[in-house]
Length: 311
Image (cartoon, rainbow, N blue to C red; front, side):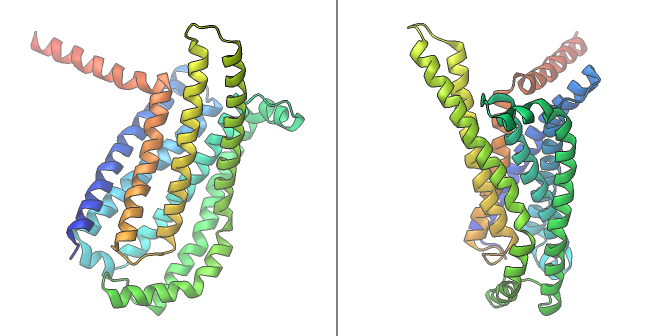
């Protein structure tokens, strides 16, 4: 039986996941409409469609998982449902981490103003590289999930089923620790998107900060919209980086069973893990007029239909 704190955390995670479904649905719809209207697939739209679709599926999957944990707890832990959901959960999270990392790289290449030859070479060829980057991400996500799935079934052979009771969860953690080194070695590749995201975000913040200082030194006493845009961009990139790092840590903690099922530590990680991609999506919507415009257009059409029906 789940405790009141567990129910509170799971309810919070469900609300956050539903907000994530809505936010990523808006991004996915806006980018898809942009591609349909322009009849071309820009590099940015391809990355955003991949990221928003993976997160949309991830939030939908985790919402279902949270409902099953809350209302079907005995059968959820006794059957193979727990193992299957964890494998799919791992794949979706790896994909989301990769696409988020590539988004940071794309922002850095397109916005930063470095003059190194390699950076200029990337800026000129980024449009051709993006499709291969996305395909590689799917491949790496599948490869990283295979040893995790193999380890889950090894645990299942040694330990019949995870249970929220203290004795069984302790036995599960002991079994998982035997294979933890193999898992970390096999899944070392998932650290690559973190490195890509951190390095590209730091480089972008550095470039924006240098450019902002120059603009401040040359600015007059009047309000400069360009300067404010650069400061807003720095805040957005910093928030992206913080949310990404927190999300990455929580994913590792959950996937490697650092805490027992439904323990306070796991529940806090679940809440944070649902909040970070949702917060990232909301920041993306707030910082991009194209994403803000779609809900306004939908609301306008709804109002028009309501007024027409009432007349």
